[in-house]
Length: 255
Length: 325
Ligand SMILES: Cc1cc2nc3c(=O)[nH]c(=O)nc-3n(C[C@H](O)[C@H](O)[C@H](O)COP(=O)(O)OP(=O)(O)OC[C@H]3O[C@@H](n4cnc5c(N)ncnc54)[C@H](O)[C@@H]3O)c2cc1C
Image (cartoon, rainbow over all chains, first blue to last red; front, top):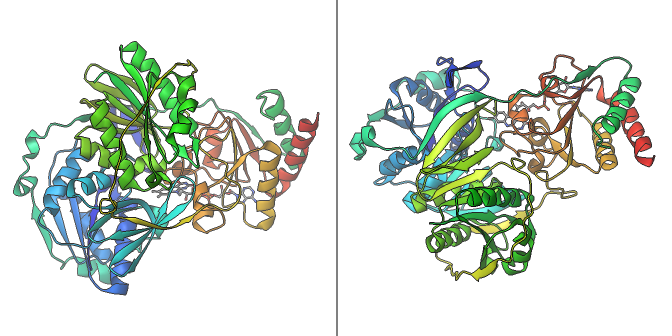
């Protein structure tokens, strides 16, 4: 069984950030493997460990994002492809077009993506890619099994969950509620250094990255409107509990 | 070309309020820009729901009906919506952000070769397309974004806009739809509906949410009691959905649901940004936490510092008393 996992390097949302003149300033050293992609890598590894097969990771990003690709290899992925671009403003459409060009002549059973990126939460790239490759897909997977050449996907829907059969070739986008991604051990890290990584450019795939015109743009960033600081109640639990209940009734009219 | 089209989300035969919020806002945008407002209902019983969107003022209600829509599956819905877009040629196609609209948004954008802006908290039309705001970085900050194109596809977070009534006498137009078995490549094997009561958290007026601090049966009973007194929906942090204590569909936050009730009571929840990403837009926030430095207190209107096992019983008792008066 051949899995491809599309991964992305993202800024750590827990790192402090600042907005100055509409620009977002953040610690560029705190870049991580997108948590949802890490779950996609993990699940592909679990499935190929059980049923046999290979896991290849693909990333579109700048050269310095290689460390994140290495991390996926250290987790256990067999090999990787780095599609190099320094363009920082690519949107989901651009990413999915580059990936679609990459997959055009590839053989695989399943493509796994994270369901969204932790920094932008857009959640578009996976199904954009599926549509361009004319693949059936399932989004927001919280569990995967493999039976009779099909992925049996547990999808978290609005109210409940659905168990969906996805034939090969197909694409699935993964939630981090699916598993706890393994932390690479020393052996994995050592091995990852010897694993093959192909480096290519969008131009190699027939895409002139410089001339891609984006149809969505970020105009700037702003702070969240601050919430007014409320009251904090400390002391005798019985007293403060009753006081807040009364305030919810009197001040907020919510009882 | 001259229409703003709103997709009406239907769940269990009921129209989701959040899509009517979007329709209300789209009508205002349409009026401002001299465009028509239309609604699209894709459902097994779509015709019978058309009447329900009338109060929000569409001039046309498009209907796609079929047994394929009994349970959500992306390929038939995608085919129905892209078919409708090909026929209607809207300037903007707007969705409420739900798990089911997220399921097709990207594919639809690729299919229509249209830009997409998901999970907007504000939007307006421009002469080039759409601009607006969306929370990013686990909703720590807001990103101002624009899409240039015609059509533009957007989805809007629930609670971003109010319902505004402006009844109309819309034309009901049924769109032809067929889908072959070969086109639907995936199959639903089973539906696992969430256990317990089915309050739609994205529409709930009051939510009581439990976190890791709720550590046992006794704690869960207190949560149930509190929710009952307040007629509230129950939500949970990832700590408790991950461990299987609460149903995964109750998870609130970045991975889970985004909610915006009038009252949100966080019990034993620390307030990690990935949790607050889903609830910081609540009108009034109450937290019960024994750690006075818990980050949740940064966004609460009423913060109760204390052990939930000691705080909740008198809290519930007092609420009952107030209710009976
Ligand atoms: C990509 C990503 C996405 C995520 N998405 C989500 C999401 O959608 N939703 C979500 O919730 N989390 C999400 N998380 C996880 C999130 O980061 C936190 O780990 C999680 O929210 C913690 O849950 P908690 O507050 O219940 O637990 P904890 O952080 O462990 O907090 C428990 C709190 O309970 C208090 N407490 C303990 N005992 C008592 C008592 N007896 N009385 C009163 N207070 C008590 C403690 O003081 C503490 O503050 C995500 C994480 C990542 C990386």
